[in-house]
Length: 190
Length: 187
Image (cartoon, rainbow over all chains, first blue to last red; front, side, top):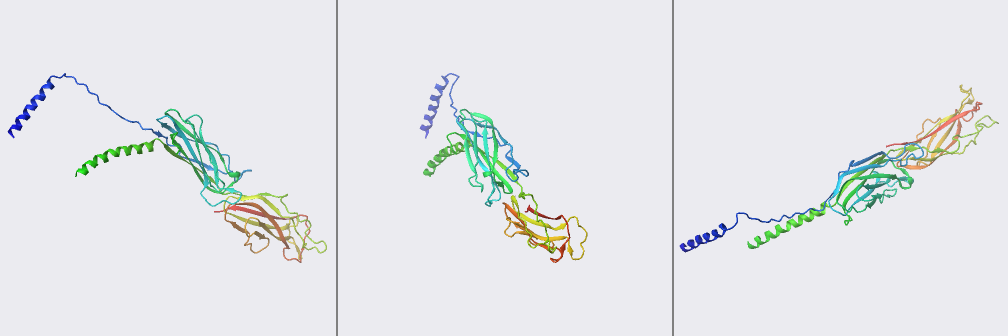
């Protein structure tokens, strides 16, 4: 055990001498690595719910049929993608009556319309629903052109061209539909 | 114990990779929903009356007897394109054919009113009908359960002299009655 202690002290002395001979400035390099993931964020729709009120005409030759409904615009503010090659897609679901009973001949329980998203790339992304009068086949999808650069912008979604299959009379009731707006890479279909 | 120590670092190393994959998949696509709502109120349209909107019965009496003709008739009227957008009722009401100029109570043996039955078909399984002068008209209102559109045919028939068929009708150039058909949305 005594021999072992003596050897250790000698070793400490030997290693201290080279340190005293070095410069008083030292330079080192530390690498910092990070990543920025591809991100798309759509702004919250304003308004999130479009209330058309009464959609059927209450007088005149079109009584009971779809009334003239002015286009409505929803804004998704400050939407962005931080990468090149993104697209906007809209999926439109026709408005249908809460009463799911198949309508009598001459009536419809579906209202079709067009949703158009603009402000992202050249042109627009548009989808027009084409539900049948019984409310089946209510959805349609449209994808816009590819945005070649990272971008931040307000995306405007306009709902227009409200029609009924065959211009039939609307059965009474509450109607609802929805538009799904998707912002993402062009290579991702869904 | 040694196996445990070796496995632990492998688990730790694998977790960051899984987390990154999840973030990448969730964040490069953003989706928002916009709802669209509206209302179609219940409403009814009683169509367009075919012709001139009146029944012309001509001379009401058998000129040989002075009593009501037994062969009175008139073509039906049609309410073209009637519809209701929901559950509905159809109601028929009618007023007797009454002398418009001779309004005083007729002398004994005479009458100044003619009763009849008005019937509306084409809307409900059981036709709505109303007989003037009847004590009750339980069939005057019928109900249809769902939205419907059709032409409604309105007929008048079953003419009878008020007070009895043996009575004679007082002379008057203008006997007038009225048939009213109403279709109404109901809850």
